[in-house]
Amino acid sequence: MADILRGRARSRQGLFVGWIRALTPANSWPALAGLLVFAAMLALQQLIEPGTQRLLTSVFLFVALAQAWNIIGGYTGYASFGQVAFFGLGAYTVAVLMNNYHVSFWAALPLAVLVGVVFAVAIGLPLLRLRGHYFAIATLGAAEGAREVINNLTSVTGGGGGITIPTFGSDAPTPYFGKPGFYLAFLVLAAVSVVVAAVLARSRFGYAMVAVHEDEDAAGAVGINTTVVKVVAFGVSAAIVACAGAFYAFQQIEFYPTDVFDASFTVLMVIMVMIGGSGSVVGPLAGAVGLQLLSQFLRVNLGNFNQLIFGAIIVLVVVFFPQGVVTYLRDAWRTRHFSILDNVRRYRL
Amino acid sequence: MIAPSEVPSVPVLEVRHLAKRFGGLWALRDVSFSVSEGEILGVIGPNGAGKSTLVNLITGHARPTTGQVLIGGQDVTGQRPWVIAHDRVARTFQIVKPFRGLTVRENVAIGAMHGNERDRSVRDSLATADELLDLVGIAKHANAAPMQLSVADARRLELAKALATRPRLLLIDEVMAGLRHHEIESAVELIHRLRDAGITVVAVEHVMKAIVSVSDRILVLHHGSILTLGSPREVLSDPRVIEAYLGHRYVKRRSE
Image 1: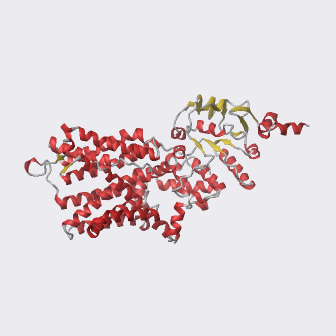
Image 2 (image 1 turned 90 degrees about the horizontal axis):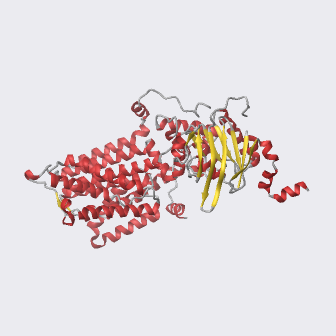
């Protein structure tokens, strides 16, 4: 008994060997399923028309954004309403470098991610001391501030007049990817964000994020440096969002500060995570795919009232599945208890 | 416990003139004492005596207004909780603080992942958690949600979470309050086993009877100051302690 209180003997076995040995059919199916979906999406590209390709590209974008928001807002419990700041900064970093300095996209991309992470750490250190609504409002303000800075740095960013990335002829630092290219780019981005989230969630750091979410005093008491956990989670989230912003900028070619600092990006991230179910990997994935496809379906089939119906559906889902659809299904499946009314009672009363 | 002939060693915990003020109220005032390795120190006092504040000041969950906290001779005053935890000091909370979204096993494993002598992998930590759950006697609830546990089991979970960080000094904040008689007995036995495993224990308790049977020495706090510090027998026979706990009318009635 005394032994376990002092620590366990360390094996010399490498960490990865341990990982691979730990794989069983039961716990490796999510990875296999993910690979299959990825392969299917690659194959699908050859079969679908350009319109559908564009739709799926936007689905992939939101999968990445939702996964990113979930890392800080879901797992760590800090609901950021300023994630679009990293999106806009990533977009503008790429555009400014490509347009003003003729830097290739692939060289600009890591710098865009770096700018996003640096900004996240800079605002995270003071703001992550705030909790709940205060953090939400402060991040919202930080994002508005970032947009205004870009808006007013006219000599560099073109200000409110927008910015254009040269994409044709010898002016282009990197040839335009085209629809198929961006389909692939955003598919890979989505896949990377899902893998990052899944690996994080199963790591020590993932448990630390959940602990911080649940109770910071208790987390500190078991040796978790809560400041580091919060700032790193915010930084990882910002890196993914900035990366998405960079690809988005190149895809759009021409845009304005109001486009890439549009707060509705943040709102969509939040809604997708909440609808799907926060604090899991599948929840935001399902939320992003479901809402983006639903929104498109309504737009095509319902005409003028599509946004109204879309909003009404979101309200209904939030009322009946406050914990998120995926979380509800998982819990219901485990307990074999599917009553939706009971579910509402459990979370509302 | 400590014989005079023993070589004086650095105390595991030393508190010097510790004080904490909340606005106009001194929750703790000029508290000094030290705890030797392998000792079990009981801390008692009526509600509002400053017991939990004392624990919070030691573990970095609150900053002292004045005074010092030394762990193993090193000044750790005002350090953050995780720094103290990495100095091999663990604690439980009076109002239990489980990580609700995780299973009981995962709750304990977190301490093994982030405390001292960390396990190499999440899997190892989960295995450690199982052993500790067995030690505190709630192994059968390993897969349960912490909110499903009874009061007594939730306290045991707090203890297992703290032990997973591999402490040399364990501060327990009222793990026995609200427990039934036989549950208190098993808690007392567990504390003795922890001491035998080389852990120094500071046990804050409201339940006088339990603390007397478990402690080598007892510190009595009253209105934020030390009323007395001594062996259980000395403390129990001190009229000031009886008065603080039971009121002066009780003392008068007894002397009549």
